[in-house]
Length: 367
Length: 187
Image (cartoon, rainbow over all chains, first blue to last red; front, side, top):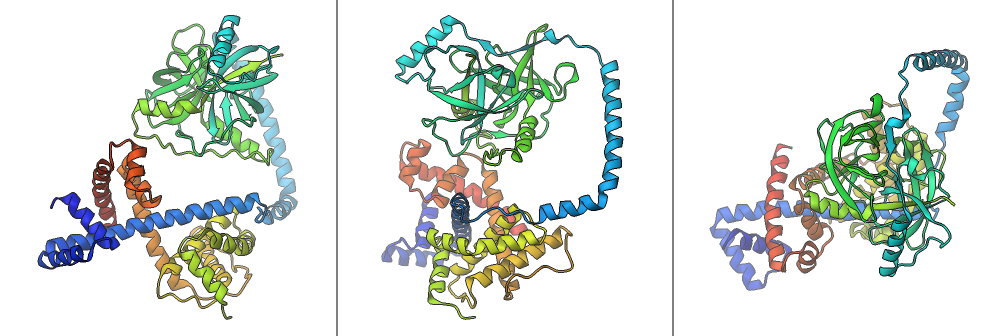
């Protein structure tokens, strides 16, 4: 009997799936062979453990679901009891100290910002080229043709024309996605299109020009939320020379590119961004930059006009900050970012296959 | 306080992971625990974590053939939560002179010691699972956590037949066993 058969036998024995005769034969074998007996004992302990593990996992998932349902039904609610009372108390006690500290901080801040504006080098704004794509009429035509070929209803009204395009990707499978803020400049309406050519109407939830991130929510009945994203998000800084890859829509079809992290800061020491050596074209703006573990490290947003192959991406840390800052203001819009990547250790081709379903073309309608 | 037959039934149902039983216990008890934790320096998330851990203790107890519940589920859960929360406060050195009481309590120290042991084993298994890598992890989980049969697994993971999947599962299991016992024997 080889190991595989033996282990199968042991498993069946422990689950009580053996016939009477088999069981007797097996027990006799155990009696005569202490080594086998030892193995059965060990195997038994192990299988118990793994069964327990499975049972607890199932129980936990039930608990999680129950909590979610009860919360949605309003049976259980979040309470805030202590927080406000305590803050009032502290405020009363430290009002004067806070006032003094605030005025000192204010004066210092004014002084420093004055110093900075006097001494900082004037950077030519033209040196950076934002990678949003102007959609020409020819391309527009081809895209409508494609939509018709695929038999999807074209949702964009006939009168309106798509003027600019970029890339966006999901951060929460409920339909929240991010793209570059500049892609949505002057946007009247935003549509996102998936890999299959289906259009969804999206709503701009928030624009943050300083970090160049925009948060979108797909508001479309045809959109079906999925359970989990394949990729994760990292808050920590990525190392120099780390290999990275990106997906985007510089044309009407998804395009893959790879490169490496060439500097930990962006143009003129901008610490909100990374500098990458990767090939990117107009339309790539807003695309995810992923590391080898399938974790998003940034959002691609611009390239240097005066040099070739120098591309910038805003760090993923900024996504977290944006979500954090929205927590208080948007009480009904809860974006939950799931940090862990489920495609870690999977080869690149498979990673891309999974990731591309969550990378969308962003189409901006101006009028 | 005596315990009704209905309570006993619910308690037994918890042990077989019955969704309705879980929901009814959740509905009846969560708010009390939530109040307790929030009034004693905890957050919304703390309340949820503590309550769910207490539910797991209840589940573990319910599975034991010789455990007899001698008080109401409510009292038991509250006692467990109170103990768990006190311990957490102590760990974080946030202990206040007294924790406000909301309900009567029963001694649960021994039960919790048992739970701690099981939880440790659970965590070792979880770590081992994290280390075996893909596709092993998904394969083992499909079989032991989600109770899929070998045909479904072969289909899902793209093996040509159930025997191939079985073979692969066996290889994964051997690796998992090695990883698990390496940790388990140290602990």
